[in-house]
Image: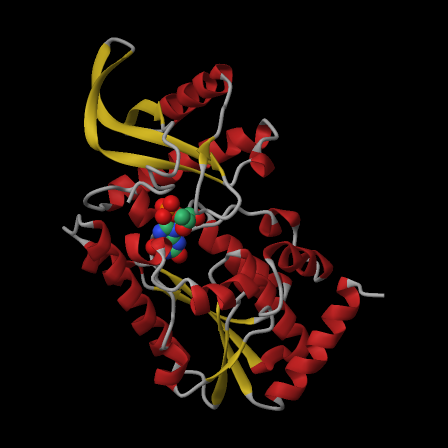
Amino acid sequence: DWTMGAYREQMVEKIREEVGDKKVICGLSGGVDSSVAAVLIHEAIGDQLTCVFVDHGLLRKGEAEEVVTMFRDNYNMQLIHADEQELFLGELDGQSDPETKRKIIGKLFIDVFQKHADTIEGAEFLAQGTLYPDVIESVSFSGGPSVTIKSHHNVGGLPEKMGLKLVEPLRELFKDEVRALGRELGLPQSFIGRHPFPGPGLAIRCPGEITREKLDILREADAIYIDQIRKHGLYDDIWQAFVAILPVRTVGVMGDGRTYDYACALRAVTSVDGMTADYYPFSHEFLGETATRIINEVKGINRCTYDITSKPPGTIEWE
Ligand code: XMP
């Protein structure tokens, strides 16, 4: 009979056979797929694996530290923390077009990844957390709406360019199975149950021009929103939830004074695969309490709206 434990052992054997005594590089994003792939490969080949975590400065509050602590300290992995915030934010400075922003981030991501990967001498393999649906999609749905409406950044073409062979230990698995495997490998539920997070990160949750000030404000507001959702036990009922900081300042009153600060939009949707989505029907109490917390606790925001757009016609992200 088939168990995840048996599958884990089988995959470990397979990775050992495939890789031999060669070195493997794995791009770690902090997402479920790359995390599970990295832990599985690490179990198979230990220090022959080096992970590269690119910090583009567009991550959520505390996220980079969390990833580094988890994989370097908990799992004892060889991990390169590529802190490239200056580079990304510098190149993005003054850019407001969504597709231009994505292209800049996608290109820099590949450059930076390659630069750091090149420092790993004798690497012959590149590990990717490709899932079964990705395998199918790239065959039959390429050019479909998710690809043409927004250019998703991936590292397609990179292995050939770098002369690396691919290791894709999750190729036969669906998302639920990857989560089960992650649990089997001891990854904490807070990692396994995570909402998806887009490659361009907070860049597409900051419509228009990106500034460090806006990103900092956004990170604070988003952390409070997610905290509220977790406290109310709603996290697992939601596909994705996040805050977008709007490119507009509005007038408010605080104490005796007038404020002129940013407005933000809260977004939460239910979905099966991200292709269609419905807004999440929070109670008015939840929304009111959350708006009050954000406005009181985050310097720089004085207005909160709730986005009730479904997909279609809207998209989940704001850009
Ligand atoms: P949209 O906004 O198109 O999002 O309804 C559907 C799903 O895709 C994610 N998304 C992205 N993921 N790069 C990514 O890796 C991107 O450029 C990108 N744009 C959207 C989004 O978070 C949602 O899960």
